[in-house]
Image (cartoon, rainbow, N blue to C red):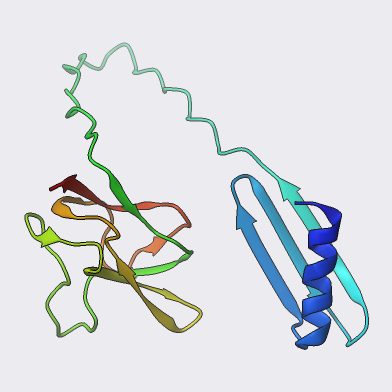
Length: 155
């Protein structure tokens, strides 16, 4: 992000009386906070890399060696990803049936879930045609921007 982009955000914050702004995108994070109507007092810009995988912990010598578990092959099916940070819901209400289940056929306009962000329920559409092969997160769990939610075998 360039300085002119940050300045534009600050100007929008002033114009719309917004006191806090936060954005995170592909290894870049910015937080802006205003304490009065004319001045941006607190600006934080962070660049970060995703955490490295943890090193394996050695087994004690007395423990019997377990047979390595075979992992299922990674699926090459396209994923429906979360377009925002929020809370994942599979149904429109706790009493309702889930929007989709494994094996359901979806089209580009099929609503597959809701992601709640800042008390707003955002319907997420499949944006592709195919069959749901995997549901990758649990109902009520928090999700991140770009996190895979479903896998779809193209039709």
